[in-house]
Image: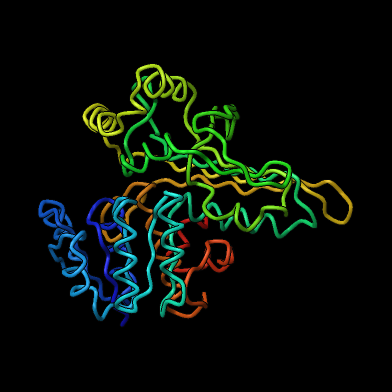
Length: 358
């Protein structure tokens, strides 16, 4: 039985522990410095619980010894230190970060490592890159590759038409940082909250705009191979305009800590959410201009006798599926691995990736 250490007992870490417990093939330790969060996780009876300060590398190294894999569901700014610990103890490393600079640092740490280092294993970045690369491979040449992902409340009631469903730090980070894209075959940076568009899917109208991190490492791989590639976050119409008022007109973009405090005090958490995934490719195949897309809507469901939100399920499923594929030999390699190295069919038939399959 493989031993897995999950760091971070929040929504995603807790869900990942339950998923791994349900498989019956993983011995899981769940660690956090927040005693209250550990008490909540104790109700699941899914893991051995350990109280540890993950910023204390010596203490973390002691706990990490003997584990086959380390899964970080911690805020992005803690992941570089965690990756160093994984390298020290010879464990494979996986995270769900959206932060570009953090991923670049982990790539450096992963050089000549004994285990696999696979950052950005969640939904976006993560699964969306797997789906996008699968579309890319279906064409002789690709003109446009568009990626759209949103984690949305099913029943919005406030003017932002949004509820907190995942990390507030990660949410704000993607709203504030430059975004990677490919234009005319060259990698470029574009501004967050720009590139506004609206579209309709299954009778529901959405808006989308640039946000940071969701494209993962796709631009590294596809620069010069596609004409245009972009990633945008999906929201209900009206969200982007209010964000621009808060971030630009009222200056909260210069005070992310205050922005986080306001969001967490004013926007309620919901487990009644829906994940919208839309990937679209246009290109040439056998001399003909063709278009193909990949569409999913994922809702929450019951796992292990409890109901979980769609964002918990999709993010944790991405993390657990890639880890499972590495530890079982389905995904081979050491050092830094990209999401695009994961075959879509292998992911969707995986015992954890199956939550994306329907």
